[in-house]
Length: 123
Image (spheres, rainbow, N blue to C red):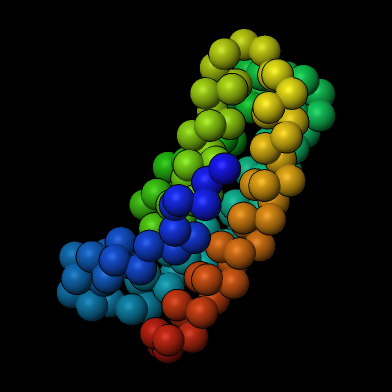
């Protein structure tokens, strides 16, 4: 569904590095924060979908979309955008339920890609 989006668009991270004067430590900290906080958003998304609570889905999905895009996790951002739109629609159709496994699998790939980038950019 989102296979056309890269797991991690490293060009975004390169631009972020450039904009911070090549402050690798700062970018690594941003990524660490993203890795630490996103599981909470994913849990809130799962809970909202399982409860068929469209309104409760909007905020964590929006946060997922935005934070992922900022750091180049474009596939996660696309999933967040779709989940946010599903939440804003007011009713969670079967499609929202079907997106959850994709979101969770993509998150695992995103974590691996971020860790790989960090390994290539040591402190």
